[in-house]
Image (tube, rainbow, N blue to C red; front, side, top):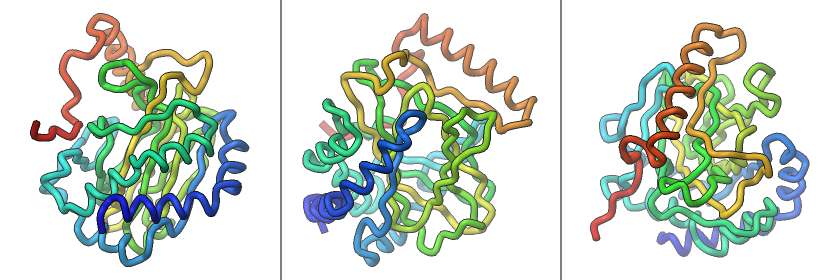
Length: 272
């Protein structure tokens, strides 16, 4: 099944729930706007995505005090289906529909998959509370939406690896959004959208297909440029101190080097 066929399925699902998910987003957007849709694609297609997901040895491992996970954006190194699904989310009619749902006039998909692509979280993997980098690689457009499509069958609450939203900041209790099989989560990204992934507690892999959408305008009128910024969990004082210093140092560097010291390697490098 090609990306156009997959895009047609995604569009039909979103369109059939448009009013419902728009209401969910509207009710949450003052802090962190989000919505999710279950059973996004036919079950067998979603299972096939999981079956062809690459192993950890075929992906880049990010392991630090900030995070522990596996990622890849070089989609031509993996099964073609995963690339077809990723780019199905970039179909113009889907981008436009999600823009209508979230009330965003200028909305663009990102063919380069800057910080997008696929991710895998195995046992003991985690992602501390953080704010996503506010812009694209060239600092020309604002990063405004994060699309996360989960494809691990029979993923239960006790397995961990779930998305956590912190609408009142990382010192308060989070809202848990389970990483259920065949679920699409769409969340806003701005200077208040703290989010994380709790630790995976099972010997299985939580697999996710992701996209970012960008815009000419920030979602919040008082937003400003910021690098990806991490915090520790509540009561984790030592981690908070380290990550606070880390964020300040990286922001200082970006004030001097506007586009960073080096290019983010997490993009899809296509043959010309």
